[in-house]
Image (cartoon, rainbow, N blue to C red; front, side, top):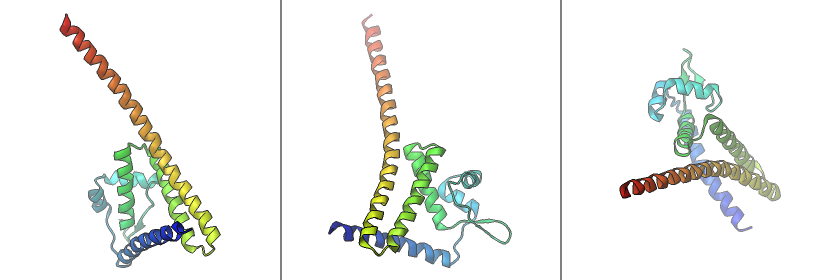
Length: 170
């Protein structure tokens, strides 16, 4: 029971600070055009539009002239997507799963913040933990595939070394 309040306080404070900063910037009308976001995250404008089309990125508001107006939230989300794609080698389908789990996490987190009853809050924290476990499972599956590929390449290298030794002896 002692661990629970500490965990809740830490999570609440961290999220609150981030949420406040986002709200402040968005209240100050800090928006970015598509070309600015593309430069910030290293993607093309076409890729940004495509990510919107397939649901990886929530469509931003539009200006009166119809231009996309991205926020810091969009930029942060894109950076997470790029990180998952580049570091873990996630496919678009895996990125969609990852985004879905991240959204589920945010919804669950918000529910925890609004729940007064301690027993309900504990149940919701358990659900939150299960969501994080799903994300870890997705990452672990990817890592396992990488390990398998690495082993295959090591076997190939061993065969090459053996062949070199054989030819040097002849």
